[in-house]
Length: 114
Length: 111
Image (cartoon, chains in turn yellow, brown):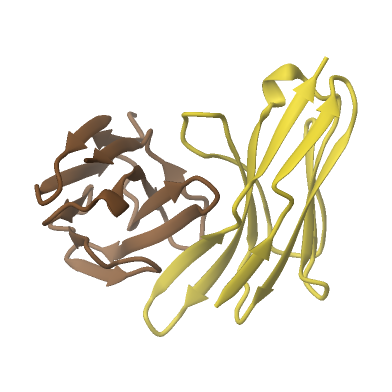
């Protein structure tokens, strides 16, 4: 099973940097995903880490430490449109059943203020 | 490509009524998933399918049934709706062990 924790809410100022943390406990690990979800919309993919280290993609970066069960999403040069919920999700593969599932955290609601 | 589509977008049911939610994808993905999202609970997996003709239970399967008769379609059925099934339902699809792509969601209210 999975246990995923992330802060419920965060507030940051336009132009600043914000880090959203995610810790997880899992019996099997096959990748960590970050999704962005604006209010009333579907989640959209942001980043994927399967090995330790930092993945950078424009203003967004994601870090993974498998030994610590820890990831963070870093958002730079915050814009008002970054106000959204950010979902951490851990992937788990079941080779016997031939399946792959994601377990999601409850999400972090980020509010960007002027 | 339309990606992942869901029908309907909104629905109001009375307790005890039945309905079917349709998910369709045109990306030739093998795996498809149904989630529900409730305030404070995050996304929870209801059922999933690893290929045409196969389905399996997720975290919260009670009160729901699914079918995958065609690779591109995944149906979620509620046989006797209950107020506890008021939620936003999302469908997603993927190649195995890859990024999941989500549909726009169905907002269901059960009175």
